Image 1 (cartoon, helix red, strand yellow):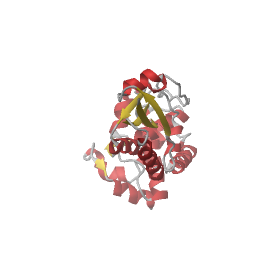
Image 2 (spheres, rainbow, N blue to C red):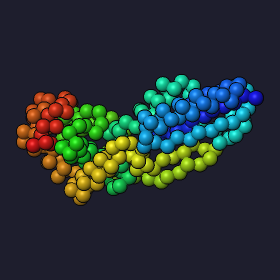
Image 3 (cartoon, one colour):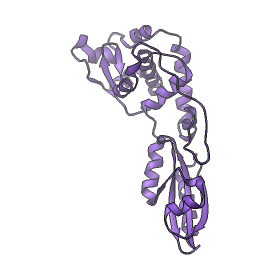
Length: 248
């Protein structure tokens, strides 16, 4: 019989479970797998991993799925480095994550969403002195805009965006769905993100989209300096400019 050692992790971004899979003809292989699991727990102290040991007649992953359908939706990975990189990538915060949090909390238009993301960004930078995500802001007519967010939500036009589902569901034998907020319990900076977002909503959530536009259009502010009455339209607003302005 073939011994299978499986370290399981629920990947938020792909919406799937992934597994580091090792097989061996001897049970001795479990020692190395346990050491690997301890290494992962040491590097990702805030995460939870599952560990499974089972036997089949073959080395293949298909033999595992045939043995237990619990693993039918799991993506197997045999390389430890690749497995770690997928976990690290899953923990990176993006502007989309902030947008998902906002649209799970309130009804708002695309324009208001863009402004709240920018104001959240400013608050976060002022409090913690580093940027919460890597996407860039561009100087557009109605203030700072993240192009990736624009592309996702432009279909709504001036209508309110459909709210993100904040249900939490993990089903055996089926792909799982994580709540919008559940991702942030997996990251080392979850409390910083959620706390700053709550402050942003409390301070600006009741404002109209165009009153928020006015806030981002302040004279000699980052947008105003780059936009230059339209001459700098579609240019990146440098992070250091935003950082300096928000920290004053």
